[in-house]
Image 1: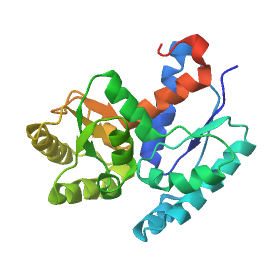
Image 2: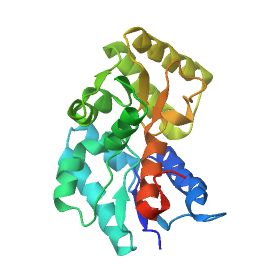
Image 3: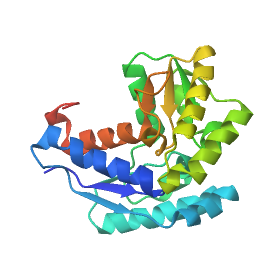
Image 4: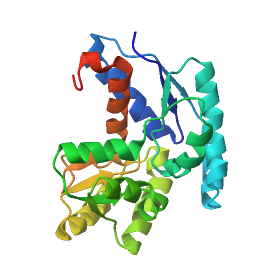
Length: 236
């Protein structure tokens, strides 16, 4: 039997995309209309934002662990969180978690290596672009990276929190992202990390000036591979 996937959600749009990806692509492993068992739990995004705005990562970890324990009680075998920003709390989470986790940045880094990318442009919330989650992983595996300028980081953060998490996907905002990615391309980047789980709903491989590393779907696919086990093969 496939393992039971537990999703610790934070923002609705990214979590929904992750859930849909698991359900839709599970068929490639398990047959028509089939996918592993999936449970999802989230506390309000506002609860997370209140701690994030105070730079209180132990508080964020407490929310994640609240969900983790409920998912353990529901029968989950392992956990994922389709939210890059709250991965900053993972050091606190992993120390007390009742279940193992997959790490979103590690899955992105592994895919970048598989595809032969060398210098990644990292986009996401301000915390993700300015924080340590991606730098720690990418440096460890020998990949270079760039982040947008301070002004561009402000623009991206505003689009995420004012629009994307609320299900608003505007052509004007896509234009802003395209221009920013194009600038990072001119600085030598060969790919772009869509490091907020809602960004792939706005920026697609067809509209991006650089090849994309879609953190949401990469995490979902990694969860599928773990759930079905190595005997099924690495990819459908």
